[in-house]
Image (cartoon, rainbow, N blue to C red; front, side):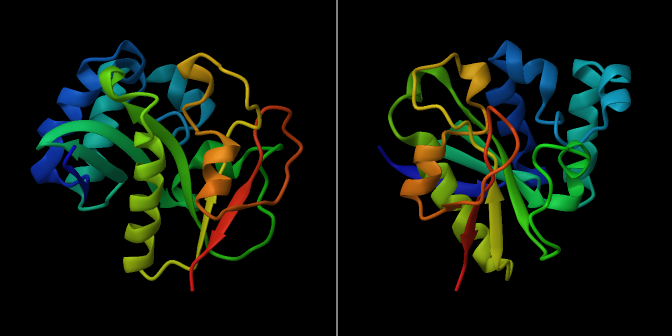
Length: 186
């Protein structure tokens, strides 16, 4: 399998439409859950959330990394400065551990035919490399603590074991489901 990874830019917008359009979960969310406040989330529906993500991209900001197999979009990882994730910034259970600037990895999506093949782990590696090229020193993730098999909607933030294998360390949290994990770039 020939895998490549690229930041989501305006030139690649049709690729995210193709990837998210095939799955009902992404078609309604458009990876805006963490970016919108609760009230904004309730006001906006699928097409409005899509437009919100498109606005971010059209402003020249990169909201995440796309994964391709043989030129076809197969995966997505949302990574941006933590401040861009309003719901995360207001979270009582995933509070900042300190005031250091961090980028956050908040979501993964892999097309069904490519799941359970390590594609999310490869996306995480690509996100680390991308953040490093941007001069970022600390990356955080908020993965699911459980190692039990779960429905895809419960593990969209990734699994703690995947983050640990990538070199992240567990910083803990008060959440029963998720933990805060950090990766420090040299």
